[in-house]
Length: 135
Length: 135
Image 1: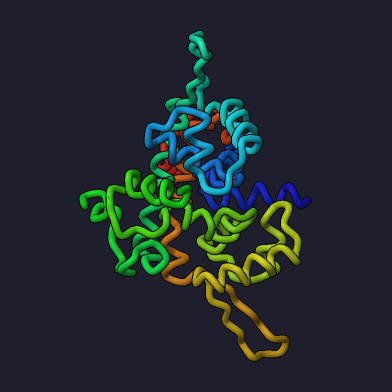
Image 2: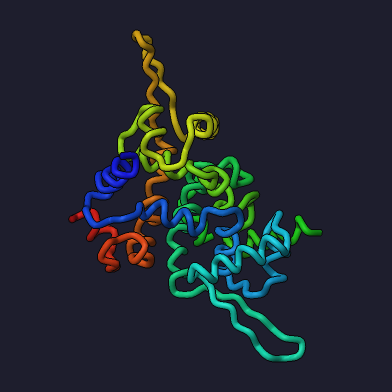
């Protein structure tokens, strides 16, 4: 009974039959774990190396980063490229699917620069994301 | 030194001085905990009662919901209205700030209906969010 109720809720929310899983929940399962959004953010800003990510994401440790990268690869969000040089070089980069997450991160940034300006800006003034990017 | 590097990264990423905190990270701190996004989703779909939320969010228990609602109230995302009837009635609803999170959830839904269609739809076919809503 409970699972039936939940299916009906999902249909009510998204206005269609034939949906077997809530798409918001599905995305949250892909990016909701601690640091996944930060890894995507840094990769969108052209970071490709393990050490770059470890050094620039506050609070992450190598073990957690390694676990997150494996999850992201399994979920099709990133590719892992190995260059057989000496020393061996490994690059991580976003797949097309991974890059498509940018619109979510943009909306996350847009929310905070407008609604949490006191936490985000030294002058505390709200801005649109466009205003921030154009500065 | 590390905190200096991180500030520079944030400036590089968002192209401006005067930013004291990454806005993506700031938003993640508000909505990244388990179930917060689901609570917002259900409130955007006009659920206002504690029992409605407990019954329709898969896997949540009353204690966790209570904790999340308190966090969300503290963060200015929801209001709690008490009606002094018998029995007493309590409604939860999104503030203007909370409602502004809709654009993030919309992008989360848009991502999954396009890029995870096999997980989301019975027929496995990708769709735009507009196509889903219009059905």
